[in-house]
Every structure is written in C-alpha cells, then in structure tokens.
Length: 411
Image 1: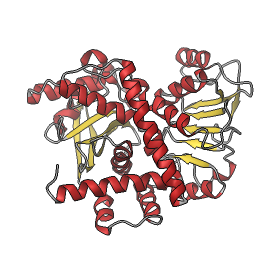
Image 2 (image 1 turned 90 degrees about the horizontal axis):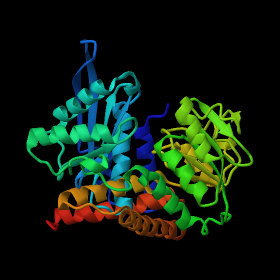
Image 3 (image 1 turned 120 degrees about the vertical axis):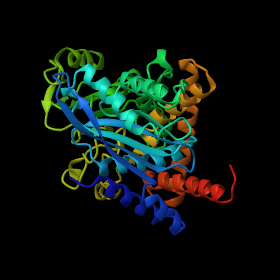
Image 4 (image 1 turned 90 degrees about the vertical axis):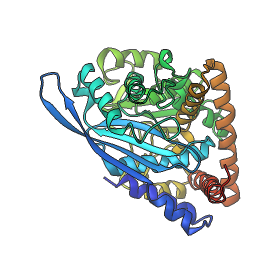
C-alpha cells in the first residue's frame, strides 16, 4: 500500500507546481514539528499486561493549537499519523479556523477490548501525553474507532492531572460533558453543505445519483442528509461488502438492518456488488480509509464527481488520472472539514463557558464552509487547476501569512 505521508508530500508538490511559494515554507511543512511515540501498559481484564504503541504527531501550530483526532486501529502506524497530521494543518487553514494540525493513534484493535479496557487505554494515553496536550497546546478529538465516551475519559484524566476542568483539551465529548451540539454529524453535514454550494457550478442535476463507500459515522449520516434532500442513494458499503439498488436504497431501513445484523450485507431490497467505487453515479463519496482509489481501479471509476469524506482516499497518480478524465474531486481538506470546524466551536464554547444551540452551530458551519468552498472553486478557475491544488494553494497562502506574522512578532 502506498505510504500515506509520501502521498501527502506529493500533493504538496503538485500544489507548488501551479503557484510558487518560498522554499522555506515548503521545507518547514515537509516535517512535523514534533513526533511523540510511546507505549501504554494496558492491564487486560484477565490480569495480563499488553504494551500498546501510541502516537501523537504535532505537525504545525502557526495558526493556533495543534488539532486532530486519535484513531485506534490495528494497522495504524507513524506514517499514517504523520500524513493525517499534515492534512489537518492544511484542513484547518482551508476552513480558516484558528488551529493547527496534529493527529494521534494507538496500534490496537479496539473491537477486542472490553469497555473497562478501553477506559484504561484512554486514561493511559492521556497519562503518557499530558505534558504535550492542553487547551492552548494541542486539542485532540475522536477519529476511527474512538468515541465521545473515550474523549470524556481522556478529558477527565487531563483534569485530574492538571486541575484544568474546562474540558477544552479535548473535543468530540458527550453533550453532558462539554460537547458541542451537532458534532456527531458535522463531518457529513459539512460535506453536504460543500456539495450544495458547488452543485450548480459543477453542472450536476437537481436530483443526483449517489454511491457511498463506508457506512460508518460519516457515511451513514451523509446518506441521510443526501437522501433527505431528494438525492437517490444507489449503493453503500461497509467493511463486509457492498449493496446496490438502481431504484435507490431506503437509508433508514438499511441503517436498521446494519444495526440488527452488523452489516449492510443481506439487506433484502438490494443486490450485493463487488465495489461501490465502480458504480455508475453522479457523485461518489469515499467515507472510509486512505488509498482506496489507485492506479489499479481509477480507470473503472464512473462517477462525475468525487466528494472525499475520508482522509486521503485517492493516491496522487490516481488524482492526476481523474483530472485528465474530467472527473471533479472535491478534496478531503475541504469536503470533510466540517468535523474540525465544529470541533473548534466546541473548543471555543469550553473556553468561554458557553453552550450554543444546534441551530447556531449549523448556521455558523454552513456560512463558513460554503464561503470557503466557493472561494476555492473560484481559485481553481483562476489557476486553471483542480480543486485539490486550489485548496492547497489557499491553505499555503494562509500558512505563509501566519508564519510571517509570527516572525514579525505579530499576534
């Protein structure tokens, strides 16, 4: 599998091909500011001890505290986390929020852990990282296989160690423990708002045919939002397989089936297909993991537009092939920035001791993310390039400005 960090750096190089930047800026962004690698001694329920490797990569903080999720996955490694931290730096700049980029991880399969073991791992992670995180240093959040409850345990552990009870060290917490209204659906809703802002400019029909790879938190909520808006969801998938219906799927029924059985497979009103990625549709939404569209399958992609809710689902060479085929890619650092945007709102609420209504959060998110989407679209037209390179250019310009301000002692 391609190294995701090398892919991220390739994307950076592609952006500098359409707009030149100071080499010092590029050199600094090529390396994370800090990489923390350690181990948590996890006591299992049977009394045995398991040493779990954990990470935190703090990529860049010119625009504000490091920000980024923590993923627990058996295949997580430092290169993946470095890539995700890099993308977070760019994503926060694209979203124009006052935060930088970071990412964390633990190499473990959480499906093999009891709730008590998850709590011990969460608290152990924070004990290891307590000196390098904090409301004005680094603000983690949930990611793959981590939950609001896991964030609550981490925030509580930070409070015990430091006396800081604001909760602003962690976002994505449960509502009753300082979480923000709307955070659970923010990634998918932000992607939908971006789509709505660009739909007419991309000459898409009023009612689109949608295929979604990944039926987890982001994918399932995206299916709900697009379906409610009158679009037809023809295919969805999860880790066990994919289903398709030319007439359109009843997303509520599919979600109930998955909750009852553990998979979308077997839903009676659909047929099983090999891959959602290769379904003929107006919009393909990868909402799972990295590197799912590669040189091996890119020529079989039949979508008109790809909306990246996942991080890094397309390799750089496949990106070029899609551009050549005039398949528009709405890049991850724009399309899925709704999650980190609402996380920044949670952080702000915690620091101020406030709690905003869901309507306030959604209205603020919509205005912000659609403004940035339209600005990036116009930049792509002016530069005669794709949306990813345009988004990178916008982010790099904002980072350059932040670096200049820091060097001049401003802010």
